[in-house]
Amino acid sequence: MSPSRSTPLPLLALALSAACDAPTDPADTEPPFDAEFDLSVPADAEAHPIDPRFVSYSVDTAQVVDAPFWDPDGTYPPTVSPGVYDFSRERLRNLARALSPAVLRIGGTDADKTWFCDDGGPCDAPPDGYEHVMTPAQLQGVVDFAADVGADLLFTLSCGPGPRDGEGRLLTSQAEAISGAIGGAVPVAAWEAGNETNAFGVTFLGALDYGPERFAEDVSRLGSVLDEAIAGPATIFWSVGETPPFLADAMAAVQGAPDPGVVTWHYYATSSDRCPFRPVPTTPENLLDDAVALLASEHAATVRDLAPGRVVWNGEMAGGLCGGEAGVTDTLADALWYGDALAQMAVNGTRLVVRQNLSGADYGLLSEPGLEPRPSFYVAWLVGRLKGDAVQGVVAAQGEHRSRVRAWAFPRGPEAGGWTGIWLANPRPEPVRLSLALEGLEVASAQAWWIEAGGDLAATSATVNGVGPAQDGSLPAPEDLPERPIPVAEGRAWVELPAYGLGMVRLDPA
Image (tube, rainbow, N blue to C red; front, side, top):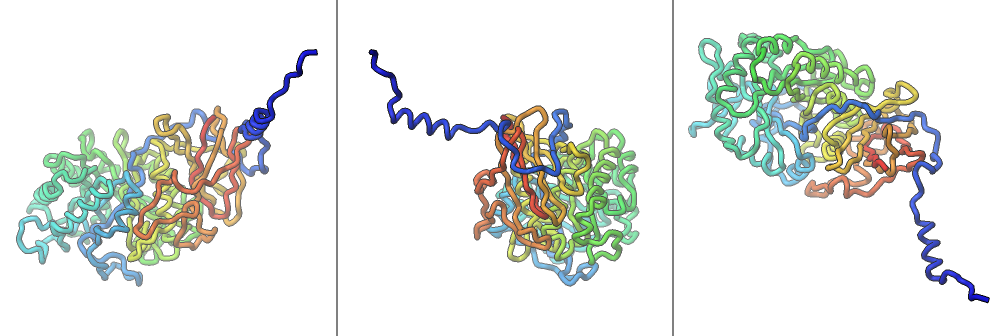
């Protein structure tokens, strides 16, 4: 009788262990719950390209030059100067560095009222036609900050009454002086020809004869002396649309001219209690109302259609006009609106979006003076760091889903990992269960980065996966945060999104 053959016990134990540890095929796993919505990214979904600096931010010219900037007591117009903006703060720089790559816009209403003092003489008082002075030291503070944190500049040049001759023609000496002072120390993404030129009649109370033809002439004159792109007309849209209308005639006036190389527009979803006119007041309910939220798409599409063939950026946006509103634009409610608005603009042709502002007033991404990240800061951080190079729409098998969950896809190419991020936001006080899929592909694994604020719509602070910044403002890369795995079954990811929950879910294809 031949000896029996058997597997040695150590090898048998090893084999059993390997069998137990073998990954389960996601297609064979049972779903953990019944989903209210089955969301998917269609295989043929159009990919709307975005700039690598898609999520950007501003520091208002008023902050740079110590002009009045949105009084805490709600006075309109503002009367209190908060002090010259301190760009040297370590915590500010570390938090801004986390948002790079980005564009830092220096602009705002006071940009058209500010004189750059470049002649080496006293900088105590501005010439006629100006109200404020920017010193070389203040401009150098901007440049040093941008260079240190890895931001390019979008700099708004004065096109107000100050830099003009007796015939109203724009003089380029100020633009040349500012460009020369920057001197290539930091990249200039574009020079903006004025701020909210459609509102110049209000800004200057009729003291400046300005219309689309004057804008076209200004753009041409600036383009003749500056090497970088000229941007404009920075026309403002708000809840009642572009008021007064300007962009269509401005684009007709420039016709086939190469400038503006970038068409800029501004957008505010609501009007805070500082504003003298409030067609849609700044409230949590209005920010989360879908009719209000979808205005971002409507206005972005209008700009796209009026500026065919040109690069479009949103140069200034926030949830509330006139400095925002405490208890609303500094809360989780604003974050829920902000992430959705970013994607809406992108799918309608806006490739870069500048948040007003980095810190200050009630709409800043960071509080002042403590520089505590507000919930919307984490939206900017996650979208900015986890996005790919495009945005896609997401569809629901059950039909309309926006009233319960707002979802957008950020696909990444093979060179960036090949996974797709799904931005999710629940605008309701009830949790929602859903599944996520990539049409034509099996989802092999999924994880999430959740902005966590305890479901409190009024929360002014948050964390991501339980982590906030260190004392010096430094943040780890999102990929280094504690993992929040998402169950996968039947080739889909299964997500339980809590009340007022939001964040990015990574879907890795098999």
